[in-house]
Structure formats: structure tokens, C-alpha cells
Length: 132
Image 1 (spheres, rainbow, N blue to C red):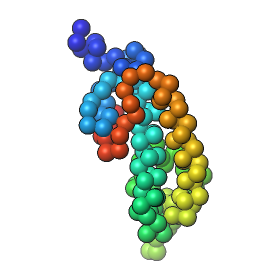
Image 2: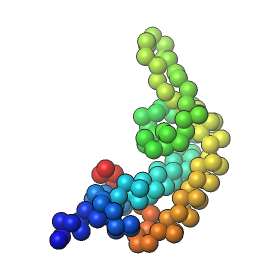
Image 3: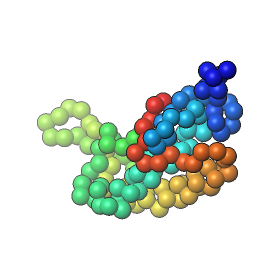
């Protein structure tokens, strides 16, 4: 019985996996986890913008952002081909990231509303680990 409960989402009762939320592991299905993880990724990015972390850079490389945030910013990506290199790198200008901030804040507010409507555990906190 304990094994079955460990694999049942604490939010909706569907089959789930053990996933990191903050400093604890919680069984969640992909949908319930995805909402929390996306909200956390957006929150971390907006905090970095507010603390000038990205403003000091002219270009932000794709590898410096989470896969979930990369998908949100698909229209803002540009290809950069460094001198002497045959390979192009996807990047984002700090200015275009700043222009996306209002849309990201709006999306985070919408995620907050959806999460408030769900029972149980609170949204993931920044600094949590993604185990799946």
C-alpha cells in the first residue's frame, strides 16, 4: 500500500512521481508538477531581472535558462554566430527579455490563480530541485 501511495499525486489522485518541491519530495503527476515548476522558473527569472543580474549582460545564452522558460520565449530568440565559428548559438538580448517581463508577470499571476484553486501543497519555492 505504501508503494502505491508514493506514486499517487497528492493534488489530483492520478499516478505521479516523486518530485522535488523546495526541499521536500512530493508525489505529483506531470500536470500538477508542471504548473508549479513553470511558476518557479518564471519567478526566478523575474527576480534575476529585478536584481540586475541579466542587465549586466548584453546577450543571454539559451543554456542559461530552464527548458520551460526557453519555450515561453520562443519569439524572442535570435541566432548569434561568434566570429570564427561555424556553429550558431541561440541567444536572447537583455533588452528583449526586459520587454517580455510584463507578459511573464501576467503568466505568473495566472499560474498563481490556478494553483490557489488546487488543494494541498503550495507552489514550489525557488531553489528547489527538479527530479523529473
